[in-house]
Length: 180
Image 1 (cartoon, rainbow, N blue to C red):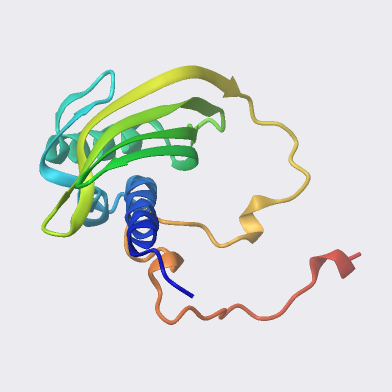
Image 2: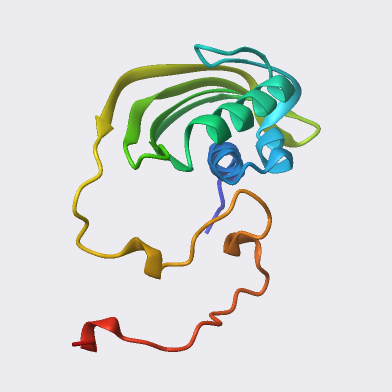
């Protein structure tokens, strides 16, 4: 069987570009400056509506604003279209963000990241980004079907379990569905 090397390289490049979006989402949710910055080239520009500027300034802004307004948040990357031309890609990534306020109300935001992502020295990263918000809503806290406090809580630093290598479950076994 002959391998189409050009098609294989296209697949590898597109996967590396998808990883850029995932590094961004994980970096912003964990307040991991190094990881978040790795999604951008050092000279990148970001237009995030209330913030327009360099990638380094955006990281500082995002951490400050997220910590001031919300107690936790998650950014999800969904549909992606990648238009690849050599060492430049134009990428449109749909996103959903859910951000929980201290009073329990959740802010929900849907939109798209429209990016120019360049490969420099073999490294794909955002060179230019426009964040487009297309809808937002509030979700009031309600009676949940379960007690979220029984789960391990995340943290905005490297003490978060997602950084633990190797990962180990250390809490004792339990099955609360058997409780009276």
